[in-house]
Amino acid sequence: MFSRYRYLILALCWSSTLYATPHTSSGIEQRLSVRIDQLLKKKQGAEHDGNVVQLAKLLTPARQLAAICPDPVLSLAGNDSRLTGKRSVIAQCGARRHYLQIQISAHGSWWVAKKNLPAGSVIRADDIETHAGSLDHQPAGILFDINQIVGQTTTRALNAGSPIVQNQLRQQWLLHAGQMVDIVTHGEGFRIRSQGKALANASVDDTLKVQMRTGRTISGKVAHDGQVEILLQQ
Image (cartoon, rainbow, N blue to C red; front, side, top):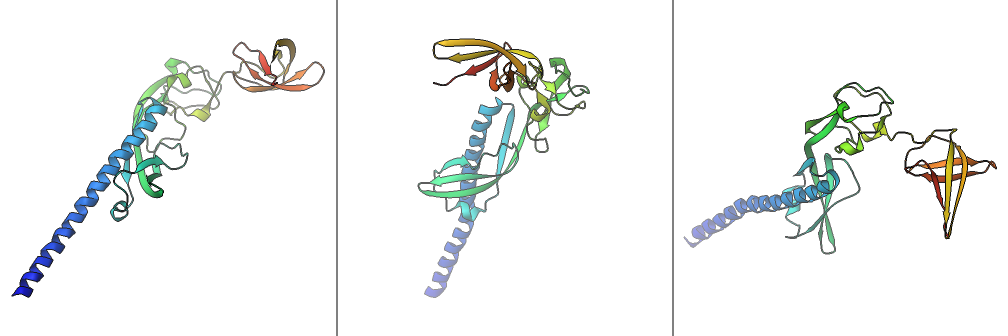
């Protein structure tokens, strides 16, 4: 009789543990998922000013999550700039690191060409429009800030409806190859002006090589006023 009751008690305890484990694992997974979403939100808020919302799905098995401390310090592994896809998250527990695998999906609003734009077009505000939806299959380098687009020049033809991507644009050339340019050399207590010939096309903040009248070649930074500035370090 005693053995029968003992068997019944053990069976109930085992059953209770069996059903509690998934619940506990589910709780751990839920807490980590919330914190990872917050981590992504903070990162994207700084980079895209709220134009992108990312959500993460934990891929790491529950039995591995159970080994993580209650309050780990979370960070994204590597410098991957992709908005979607598989990523790794580091869960730091003191000196110990756990690597979690996640699948990121994202949605937001971005800029697309309103009409066909030939290569070499200077983009105006009425050449583009916003489009909202899933970012899961959009190209890398897609632009969300209109200030990074208007006034830029297309490096290739863009079809109507295609997303505006960083590597499709360049700033307008401020200086052109062969053009005579003003050179300003700065140093401690002096400022020298001279002229030379630009050896390439250049935009604001580009480093440009200039050939002096003596035949010597120097490099300087293109200023907003079109001058090439050279700063001599002491």
